[in-house]
Length: 455
Image (cartoon, rainbow, N blue to C red; front, side):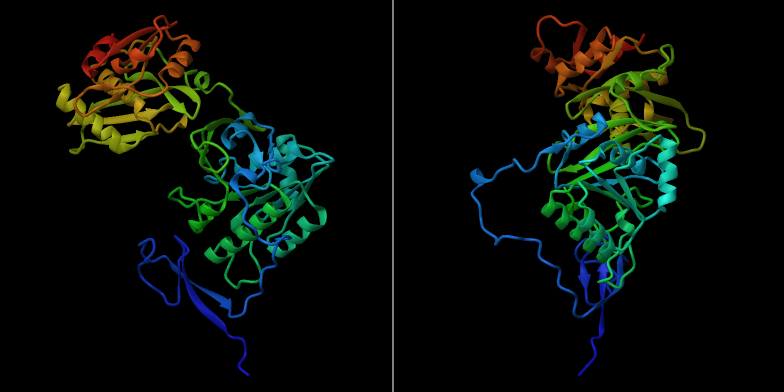
């Protein structure tokens, strides 16, 4: 009788597609040179079924959500991003650059939530128990109900979970966990997919929230197969420069809440601290008498945030003009520069243009267009923008100012921060009450807006 041979298969590291032979281009995701050879036994052990009752279809109106309460975390900002807390039985994946604060945040939450009737298991695959203890001491964290497990084999981790029955599990990180059922190396497509699936099964069966730490590639994408992002219930990504103080936690996926909410944190010697008023923080170091600086209001979910935008325009000395941005889409900036050149006769083609969103913030919405264009015009003409004005509006290709959403919330935030004037699109004027606490300038052309705010 022939021995149980080990067969070879090839798995795409980008999308997880499996092929019996190597291919240069993946037919599923069309990526090149992404197939990696993996060895698997022909007869694999059958995963034990976690279902205690036969499968039956249930009417939608008969489904109860009483068994899915939310667990409020220690951090209000973390709660906001999750949609009001951690749903019991959910699997949350947190990614970000090395040293940005993923492990710090989860260790703080694990220590803060743990108590006698709520034991927490923190599985560390990258550090020893002593290293984790040293980090906890540095952060000032103590808890006799937080248990540290330095282990990377999944079978051992699942045995510990079954024995101690924790109320929450943290895996740091999922790329270091492996199962002995597969012969591929830890972090491979098959290992990450299989280990995540087993953890999801445990989370759903026992109603245990599982928080996973995920690595990112040098391009800033989550390491491992794309299917990992589809499997988890929520995907949270840390943004910001590790050399800066502020961190932004953004939800890229959330089955139990909005993906438009963000959490703002400050990295201190004692760990991550919540920033309840981001507008005050981002405007704290603004210089009022400097050209090329304006204030905009962005909506992140239900939260309006005032943000300083800076621009610097200078003659190009290198033959080809430079276009550099931080926190903005470069293609959007190029479009706004084209509008300035064509509709307002600003000769920016031979100029180097640098645009920056202060504080490491990333601006995705078009309501920031007016503030960006005003900054560029201010720097080019060396005229200061009205320091008491907030600029809100989307710019069209014809040089017109288009209406934006949530105008009342934006103006209320500006008034709360002490701003006296606001330049908004004329299309938003009809949706405002007759009397407001802030003076409104409603315009329909970018040229008119610039003449209003440039001193």
